[in-house]
Length: 146
Image (cartoon, rainbow, N blue to C red; front, top):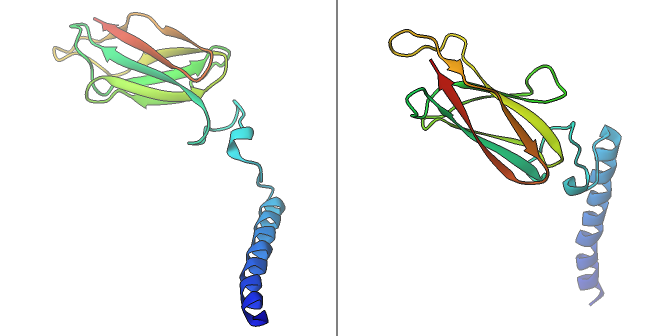
């Protein structure tokens, strides 16, 4: 009877020892040992488990049809350079996750080298300002003109 208790106690002791070793290893590397839900910051990259807001948009051409392959850039209002660069898909849509916190963003299309079929350049009607409060989805449209 005592041998059965001994065989059950040894794996549990090994598991506890392994957990202590893993935590010590992560602490020695400087990695956080807290759950990801408590370690969120707007300046860090978003992890799949973090809460986020979604900027979802469509690029519309001069003929009010969606446009494929347009570079879309997104930046915070306080920044000078874009933080995110996307490309519209086959139905003209794009989506970008941003931190779920109160912030303002500017979204625009980079139209360098983009022309219509007859060779005329396209222009963006106007940049779009986006305000995000929480973990929400904000839908916008970027309209191109000739």
